[in-house]
Amino acid sequence: MENIDRTDSRLTDLEVKASFTEDMLDKLNQVVVQQQIQIDRLVREVAELRERGPAADDGAFRSLRDELPPHY
Image (cartoon, rainbow, N blue to C red; front, side, top):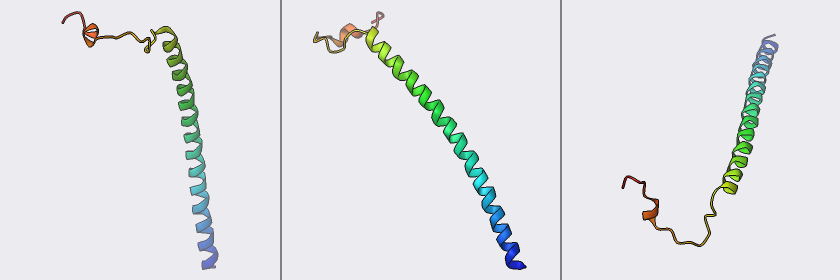
């Protein structure tokens, strides 16, 4: 009898752990999906900014003095 009770207890513990693991996996999956959506949005935004902005490698020399804010 004692062996059966111990086996039942261990089985119950494993079922509880499996349930928590499944719940955690579902939550992590949701996080991954949300992060992928955010990554896709950021990639589109960077592409749009590159299209709008001036070419960084246009070959023209730019002095750091040209980059100073107006109050200097």
